Amino acid sequence: MTAQLIDGVAIAAKVRGEVAQRVAERIAAGKSRPGLATVLVGEDPASQVYVSNKRKACAEAGIEAEPFAHKLPATATQAEVDDLVTRLNANPAVNGILVQLPLPKHLDEERVLSAIDVTKDVDGFHPLNIGRLAMKGRDPWFIPCTPAGCIRLLEETGVKFSGANAVVLGRSNIVGLPMAMLLQRRDCTVTICHSRTRDLPAVVRSADILIAAVGRPEMVRGDWVKPGAVVIDVGINRIADATRKSGSRLVGDVCFPEVVEVAGAVTPVPGGVGPMTIAMLLQNTLTAAERGES
Ligand code: GUN
Image (cartoon, rainbow, N blue to C red; front, side, top):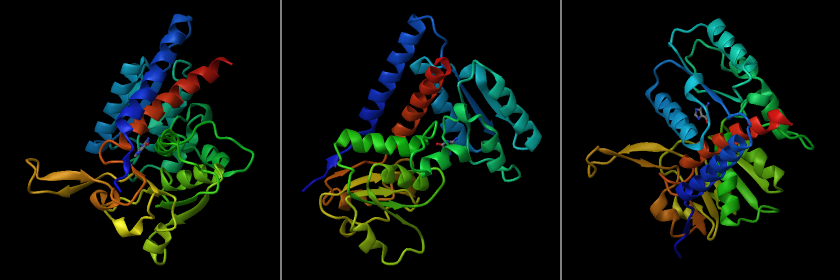
């Protein structure tokens, strides 16, 4: 059997189209244009590309990002970053604030993320947002973008959540942890795996829904996967490939050629989860603007 391919490019385009339309309707109704502030500290090349892609996507959806694009040197002090966040919190034209991670080592990430107004925390990384996500009967203001994108991919695939065994590989604050909490809120039975998990292949084989977010190229093999399982590959790893002009190519945390023969549905890398992160950021920014009115 060959798995259904979950097309993240098409689903992200659909989300971005929905956001663009709702923004246009706001503007036509005389309401404000949603605004997203981005804060990039230092020169990390990957972070520069991510932030630039986020700003471009905002422009396409009619969200204002260029006037609020802040770049600080790698030597920026804690007080400088804190001051900037305080000013953005107070700016009514800014509905969402995104501080790109990782921050340079001398800065206190927790302090910066905690300083963001929770109602503008479109990344969903504020401890109050994560805490509310973890609690029964509470709702966060925002859900972190990559896990939210994974849930949307699963929904679009028609996955049944209630009672499903979900296995999450990885326990990062950005993906693994919120992902596990989201699946649990949808009544999955959730197992979180990490480097100390015993007999990882056997645990992974119990998954009806598998989320791989460990950053290890092609770690999940075909014989780890339950036939018919739905597999979401969050990994983006660059590996050497002498057959390519560039000398390298991108692979996920899942060995795609093997897993595609066993799974019921699987996301490719690239073109799976990647495009969803930005789409959900746009959606969160629009939500922030809409809430500001009510
Ligand atoms: N670094 C890696 N992923 C993310 C993300 O989704 N948001 C931010 N702000 N930083 C990141």
